[in-house]
Length: 354
Ligand code: NAD
Ligand code: DAU
Image (cartoon, rainbow, N blue to C red; front, side, top):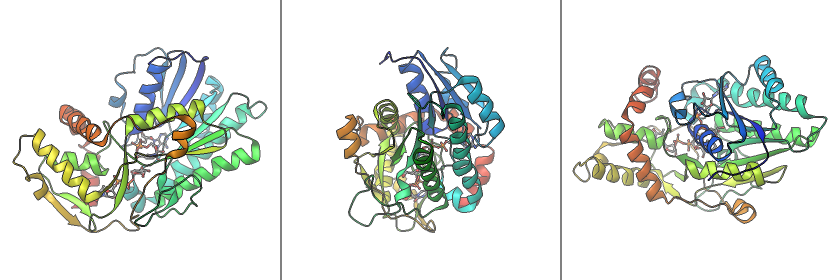
């Protein structure tokens, strides 16, 4: 899978998080002649254990730091002269954004601005061959009804502080393109799942609770719909958009894989019963309907035909395979799970669910 492209130095932000660690792994292995620098503040969601496979590679450097720290960001841009930025660092959990919206404004909006400013200061006299890639979410489009799909031209209509902060950062990236000519590309992706997913999000939270035979807190009536994509397929899409995407364009990325939460949870319960040699139906008994998420978006679903037609991308992993691999990964990595669910996680869990 190695690929010879001209040498390049790339900054990946948020590379110790769920998606970021897969993207770092993908780029470090596929492009041995690239220098990959990972800037991550190691918040509760960042974990260097996610990067064990690449930590000693010659083309990889980790820097612990905050994207809102202007001095540090400017220093590392001057030191490394990044030709490309793949920006993933963010506060990413909707429920946390409801309880602490300002943290989302700070990292997602201000942090993106600090990076844009540093990139502009470095290259504004010659943008040739440079690229700022902003990783965003389908949540900026708001909620769909029972039918329809989000396309790249769907108007923005964010409903949570998280999605509002991501929408704002998308607008700033575009504004830097229009105003200063900064060469950018944006992608808006649907719900990812897979290894290293922090167990505050639906799938890993429920896997962990099933292992521990704890209640499975389904919000509202469970009839909310999400479009699920295996994280490595997102990393593949990011590689393509970064290298082949057109400047000033947006690409929607999705799994063509819609599930109502309650249906997905039942499939997950049944698969886990099989893998844990439990009685069929045992885990479904843990399902507990709880108070709904405020401002809960009914349905997300992506029309990914643009990236398919223009860049030839489509998901390579079926949901059945991806879910099975994901469950196996969590069952085989209980130490990872127990490390991330100790300490601060216990406090979060109590405040959110108990
Ligand atoms: P995550 O929460 O797992 O990881 C975020 C990472 O960013 C962590 O490593 C964290 O330490 C780091 N970080 C947070 N604040 C920082 C700061 N101020 N400075 C430096 N680093 C900081 O998130 P994720 O699920 O991997 O999402 C990554 C990106 O992809 C986000 O921009 C998110 O909006 C976007 N996205 C996520 C999904 C999804 O389903 N998870 C879907 C579409 C888009
Ligand atoms: O669509 C992309 C987005 O997907 C990303 O931008 C976000 O970073 C990512 O967190 C995710 O957002 P969601 O809010 O869709 O994901 P979450 O896993 O939190 O919830 C998925 C669905 O499950 C949603 O309808 C809420 C529901 N849910 C979630 C949790 C945590 C529950 O019913 N119970 C729960 O305990």
